[in-house]
Length: 100
Image 1 (cartoon, one colour):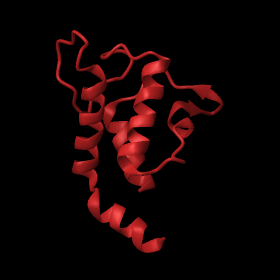
Image 2 (cartoon, helix red, strand yellow):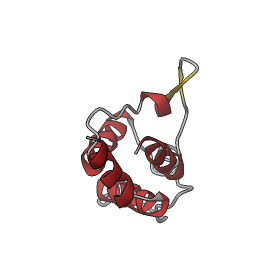
Image 3 (cartoon, one colour):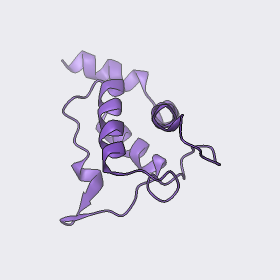
């Protein structure tokens, strides 16, 4: 188990994690009429217009991409008992880096 975790950590570094998160989000929004590219500063709600179902779809896709079916996005979405208003792509990548 420890070796598998180390292999996952070796496979992903900060830049590849960010690239994977961007690719995952781009696949979700590929048919949307967006005027800007997705990057680390892109906000899911304000910039992309994500709704709750889109967040769920993104969470499921990232869980599959990173092989972490028990990864909880609650830590990102709820702070001090309240839902956060928005997240950037970079914040998601940083959270994944911290848990890989």
